[in-house]
Length: 271
Image (tube, rainbow, N blue to C red):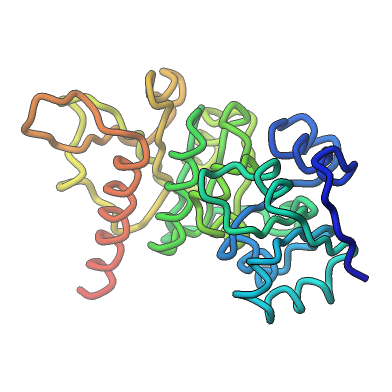
């Protein structure tokens, strides 16, 4: 049965707001929020367990089939007024659809490092927009797994989820407590790793050997990789630039690095 909510002070609305703004609340509740047609439908089709579903009358008029599908599987389906939708929204132009879902049990799909596959390791990425874009790019180029330091921003932050365009639901991701120790362990197994650094003395990605795949490391937007992490990598690589800029935005750099790594793997297979 669909509940109609007209008050911005309703308990379900307050719960959504808390989950939207607090990483601690999300972690403690094991719940996260989603906004927008594309993201909510991606969650549904990717097997995310949706508990609550909020929609406006205008959204229903445009996406009646989606509302009916959501209502069938959600424990709580709620029609809300435009005023309540404005309270829930994290965007300037909300589409009138919002969901609360259970956090994914990623322990069932941990990243297994294999030879000739490609992986991305992210250290201290602070901007959720950057992290979301990196995840979206990683899925587009079929990266086999994403490793993240504990100090990266929350994967369930609304901006990360929107920026990833649902890629997070499908990618294999894993939190690594000590990236430097992890890299040394993998190097002993014959898995190469590449520390991306803004250093002209490092090897250009245009000449680096990515034929066997490996782990590409990208660091914090302002400070890059920690020294011990970069030193633990098998190689240090850099994106050659002719202009005056010393470095690139983390998401832009990740896109270039992922593409070059995948190109190296593809070329080796075609030879």
